[in-house]
Image (cartoon, rainbow over all chains, first blue to last red):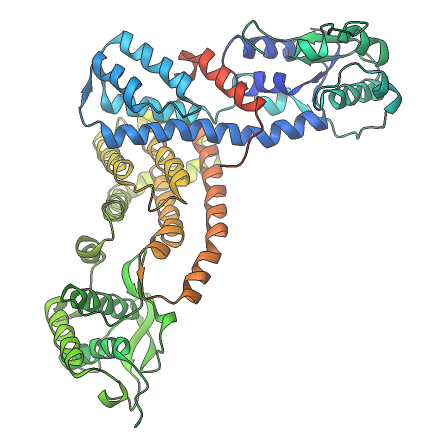
Length: 231
Length: 330
């Protein structure tokens, strides 16, 4: 355990609440390693809260739409490998956002052989339901792991002028994290899944982004929580 | 009255009351809902014979009915009455109204009178006249989906009757915290395995609904229908039958207001259709809130599954991509 306060960017929140892969493990491990509070800044928290239900609805509805296509088009009670490949190639709509993982799902089913139609429908219903589940529920749930920062944010225009990070609302995230560090005192680290913007040196810039952030703000560290495939 | 006040559409309704009264006398009951349904049936039968008198009708929860808001209803009166525990209105011809108050084509008038008489004869019984919902849905449901939805609703109501004690347990269980009541035992043990035959039938009903839902016709509620269907199946397989029944009723009401009534009506004036349409967004929003509440109950109490873990990388990549994109509400 460490005694650092943590400030998290959106990618880390996604890793905790939504992802099911290595990225989830890495972000979860990060917030579990401190006995201090992990904060979502106002900018990050608002973005995450507004997108979360929409992303979940969209993916869950995609799975449900695919289930509905099966109900309309498949009447066989038992589906063999050929049927499963046919569903993957002909019924699974490539326009769905969920196409990528449903494709893999059918790949795995086809490798296992036969499945009853009702079991396939049932598993897809479970999958659509799981999309709405908090991926961190076994660790007390997202809301117990991450707190929203409600202590306001001051203006730091002088720091902002010197910050190299400039993409989207990244500078706001840095300044909000700085404000939390200043307000609370003690060690405060920023966790990000975006090393390109927050950590690495960019062409034509005099120093690493991380060095730049640490030099200008009260943050004690910027931690890279990206994985090989993401971002 | 000397100058006719009413047209052929009103004449049809007048004839229905008159035929019932002639057959059963003034003291027999003609509840409002039966009257609305009888008018709808007489009108449909006339249309089958290519006679369209432009009666305003629409579909709603209880079947095809008269759109009373669209007509001048002064020719009948409603008498408040109590039948056992149920209060309602008994329909009577208003004092002094007679055939000459209606302006009708002679041939059409004869057709309406004959059809009203024939429908009242056919559906009337020794103890009065009553049109079952089943009859209307079987004969006149606007599409297969609506017919199947009615069948599913009737089936679910029967589960409640067969399994009343269990249902009550489930309501209190969920309300005071499901896990406190059932402990660590899987809901599956008390739910789906004990009722696998029931669940097989629920599965078949839901499967038919998914297959029959006409997305083009009922496009506004397509997403909410899919959410409802999926949650309903999760409730059934986890044994939350009382929740399933409540949820059916709210879906049915919302669907009736958002899709059934606006999409299945005849000769209803624009002003009334606009009133219906104005309610749609509130209805959808309130049902969406209910879905969220019911989903929380299901998520907190369902038997755990791990479908996303099997496809964890491709699923997580997809979700992260969506977070990186600007989104719009569906």
